[in-house]
Image 1: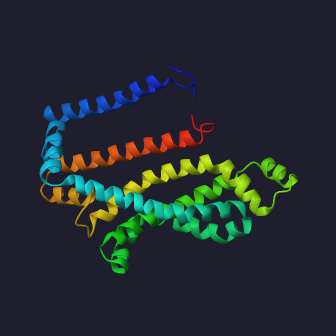
Image 2 (image 1 turned 60 degrees about the vertical axis):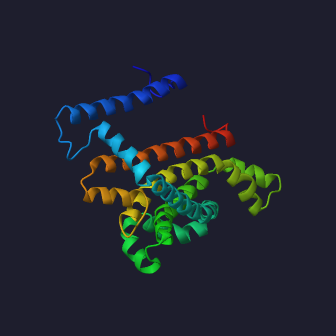
Image 3 (image 1 turned 90 degrees about the vertical axis):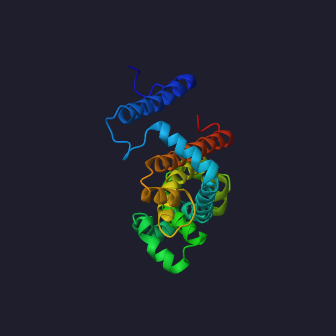
Length: 258
């Protein structure tokens, strides 16, 4: 057994990560193809791939994927553009934090799915309603996490900047923001992953396109292969976006992210 917190090489990490997926698929195949689980309720991997190919080649599922990606990215960017400055100011200025923190802490526990009926009444069933679900699900989480990160900035850095003649706004721009930029980027990466759960909820009701819409249609047909394919596509896209975000963070902040 390795020692606690002892790092592993990149090659070992890849092998171990891929191994779990292989074991998972093998267990799934044994359970379904071996007759231990009815294929009516859980399609086997071969049927899932066949149904997925059918969705992509005959039913325009690629367009549904593009629509869902657009909704996730659009709603997340809307939330990040507004939430990051608010979180930065909350972490920097304690009166501002005392004013907003109780409401933000309250609002972040409200499930985005609970707002879907109201948002349909307010914004209809168009794209804006889907974007608002992503926005609500991401906005308050980003604010609070960034406020906590900025609030934990080393005090000696702030005192050193004041000693060198920095102004209050200069502290925010030249100390707090640069010092916490890697942590802010990591927070955005994590919340982007949560955004994928919100968009599927938004697409389950009042939607005529998207991955969630396809999953609901497949449920009515008992097409478990199509449902599983849609779920796997979400996971694959999320994993790709996570790797891209990690790569960007590593390039921007090589001293912080290994």
